[in-house]
Length: 116
Image (cartoon, rainbow, N blue to C red; front, top):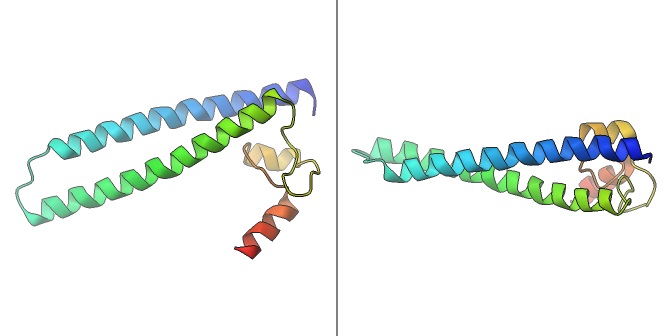
C-alpha cells in the first residue's frame, strides 16, 4: 500500500472516531437527562426504559467500532494495514473503502460468517 493510501484511510478512520466519540457523548447526555426525569405513570417509565435500552445498545455497538478503529490505526502506524488476518493476502481497496476497519478479505469474511 502506498503512503497516500495509508493517509487516506487514516483520515477516514480518525474522522469516524471523532464522530463516534461525539455520538457517545451525546447519548450519555441523553441517558443522564432520562435519569433525571420525573416519570408519572407506567407508560412514561416504560417509554424511558425502552429509550434507555436502545441508546445503551447503540453505545455498545459504537464502542466496539471505536475499539476496532483503534486497532486499525495501530496497523496503519506500523504499516500492516490492509492485510487479511486469516489468509494474509491484501484486502481489496474497494472493500477498505466500504469498511476501512475490515480485518478480513471478502473470501475470508464469508468463511468466518459461515462458521458462526
